[in-house]
Image (tube, rainbow, N blue to C red; front, side, top):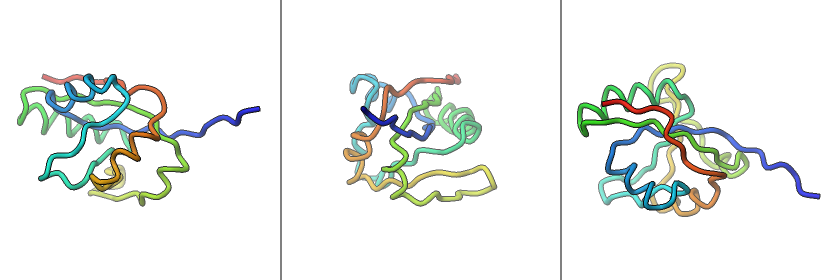
Length: 117
């Protein structure tokens, strides 16, 4: 008998270039960080992700997308929740060198849930 895997939903605001790389990875992994990106920041709140995609990605990239994906909860417990501002501005800080391991714990596909232009 297999036990039901417990997962946590996460969101990530992203621009078109990163989204293209996720598409190339068959919607099941995040691409390696660039040298100037030492941390991968998934967020714990859809509204926060929407604000970043709409207000920042559109301005800088011409389009912004909000993705949603599930990660094994037990694995995520290694990353303390970081408050990046107000009560609901919560994110995880995943060091770039741990992103492959993080990707191995994504359950299902990364889905685009909002698009802004």
